[in-house]
Amino acid sequence: MDVAAQKTAAAAAALEHVEAGMRLGIGTGSTAEAFVALLAERVAAGLAVVGVATSERTAALCRDLSIPLTTLDETPELDLTIDGADEVDGALRLVKGGGGALLREKIVAAASARMIVIADAAKLVEALGTFALPIEVNRFGLASTRIAIERAADRLGLSGTIDLRRRGRDPFETDGGHLILDASFGRIPDPEALSLALHAVPGVVEHGLFLGLATMAVIASQDGVETVESSP
Image (cartoon, rainbow, N blue to C red; front, side, top):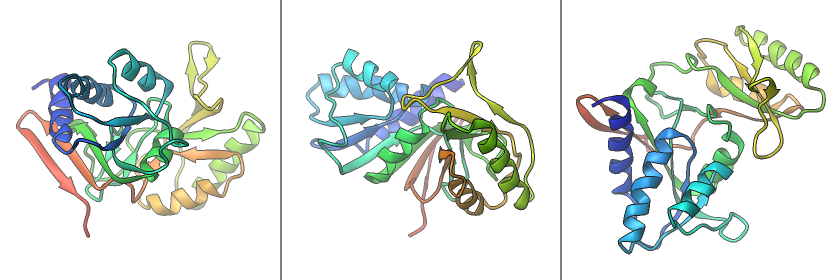
C-alpha cells in the first residue's frame, strides 16, 4: 500500500469502533479526512451519529458530506474521538498540530471517553521529536513568548530553531485567531516535563504534545494494519 492507501486502511479499521448513536470527535488532517469520507458512506447508509469537528476545515467537509454536526456547548461529553497524528510513540504519546488545529483537537479529545489515533506507519516513532513541535501562542508578546519557550527548553537540555509558521508571506492564523511556533527540538526524552514547562509560559495557549489522551492507535503499513492499545 502507498501512503494514501495506508491512511484509508487505518481509517477503515477505526470506523469499525463507531457504533450507532455515538457522539464523535472528528479530527483534522489528511488521515482524518480519509475517515470522514468513509464515515459519510456509513451515514448515508443509515448510521445515526453526531460529530464535533476539530476545525472549520473539517466542519465544512462534514457539512458537504451530510454528516450531522453538533458543538461541545450542545454536547459537552463525547463517546469517541478519531483523529490523526504527526507522531505517535509506543506509549501512545502524540505530537499533533501539523494541520494547525491542535487547540481544538485537544479540547475535543479531552471531552471524549476514548481517543483512537489513525496513522500510516511513518508516524510511529521510538521517541517523539523528529516532527517539529507546534506551539499555539497569543499574538501579544510574541517575541517574549518565544524567548521564554527557548529558556524553558534549555532548562530541559533541549535546543533548536523555533519558527513562526506562515501561510505564504503572512503568519498562519489558527481558527482561534492565534499563531503557531514550530519548535525543532529534536528527540524529546521527557515529554511530560516539556509539557509542564510550556504550560508555565504565559503566552502559550496550548502545545502539540498529547499525553494520556489516546487509548488506541491504529497504524497501517505496507504489511497491513496493527493496533496499539494503552496500558491499563
